[in-house]
Image 1 (cartoon, rainbow, N blue to C red):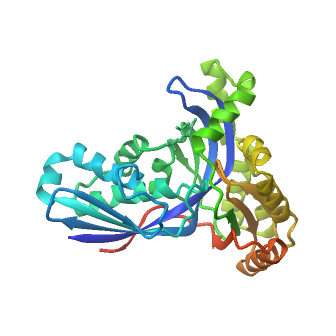
Image 2: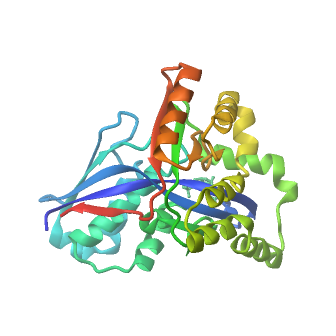
Length: 324
Ligand code: C5P
C-alpha cells in the first residue's frame, strides 16, 4: 500500500469544566467531547526519500515542523525506526475544511489522521489504546480525535471514556475568519482570574472529575441513547451546554459574545455555546432544515463578509479511512 486517504473530523465541546492545576503546567479538566461531520481530508503517500513533506490548501497552515501533523509523522519515524527505514518518507497533503485557530481541534485531528494512516501504511497493527498514548504526547485533544464519537475526557483531556453515540442533531458553526484565539492565552487568562477557586487536594480533584460521569449532561446523553433523540432529549442536551473558557474569551471578544447571543436567540436553536477555547460558536438544531434557516438568519442579521457559517451534524466516528 503506497497511499491512503483519511477523513479527519472536527470536534466541539458540549461540556468543559476547568477543575485545577497540574504539576505539568496544564489544567485538570472534565469535558464531554463530540465529533462533528465537518472534516479535513488527509492524503498520506510514501516517498522514496526518508523526508517528511507537508502541503496544505490553507495559506495560514504551516508546512514545516510547527505543524502538528508533521510532528505526528516525525514521532512515528522515531518510535518505529525499522518500519520507517523499510517504507521510506511521507508526503502529507491536507485539504483544510475545518477553520484554523477555531477551538474545533483542526490541528489535533490532522495529527490523529497521520498516526492512524501511518499505522496502516506501515502495517504496524497498533491498537487504539497504543495510538491514543502516542497521540497524547502530541496534544491533549489528539487521543479523542482518533476514535471520536461522544466521550468524557478528563486529565489534560487525554483520558477518554466513551459515551453512547449521540446522533440526529444538526448545528451551525459560526466563526469570524480573521479572529483566532490562542489556547495557551485562554487557559493562562483563566488561571489569572480564577486560580483561587481551583481544587487542590487529589481526592477532591478525583471527586470533581468523577462528578461529570454522573452529571446532567451525561444523563441527558444516556437518556437519548435509550429513548432516541426526540425533541425533548435534544433540548435537554442543549440546556446542559457548559464551557468555563467562555468566562475569559467572551469578555475579551465582544463580537463573539454578540454572535453567541444571536445564535441562542435564533428560532429553531436548541442551545448555543462557544467550543473549546473558541472563537467558534455552535448553535444546535433538531433538523438540517432548521440549521439551514439559522445559517440564513445569521448571515442576513450580521451581513459581514468576515463571518463564516457552516451547517454540519454530529458524527459518531473519529478518523476514518476514505480510500486505500
Ligand atoms: O495540549 P495542547 O497542545 O492542545 O494544549 C495547548 C495549550 O492549552 C497548552 O500549552 C496549555 O497552555 C493549555 N492547556 C491547559 N490544560 C489542558 C489543555 C491545554 O492548560 N488540559
